[in-house]
Length: 122
Image (cartoon, rainbow, N blue to C red; front, side, top):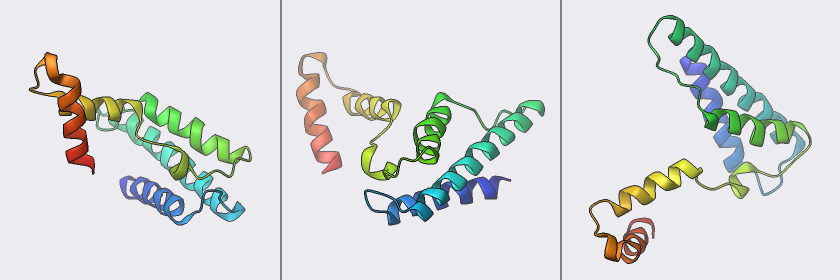
C-alpha cells in the first residue's frame, strides 16, 4: 500500500510537471485518478496504523485541502494546472521564515530575514 501511495503522489507530480498552464482532458483525468488514489490510500494507511496503535500516517488539514482544492476542482471541470497556480503551503512558508529568523535579534529581524532569504533562495 505504501508503494502504491508513493506511486500515486509521484505520478501526480509528473503529470503536473509535464502539463502546460491548462491541462488536457487526459492529463486532468490522470490527476483526478492519481490524486484520489493517493488520498484514499493515505487515509486507509492512517486508519490501519491508528488501529494498530502505531500512528505513522496522520491525516492533516493539508490532505483535505489538497483533495478539495486540486482533485475536486479538476474533476468539476477546471483545467488549470495546480503546479502553475500554487505556491508553498502556508505552514511551509511560516516554517521557512521561522528557520530564517532563528538566532536573529528582534531589532534587525526583518532586514536579516530578507537578506537570508535572498541568499538561500536565489
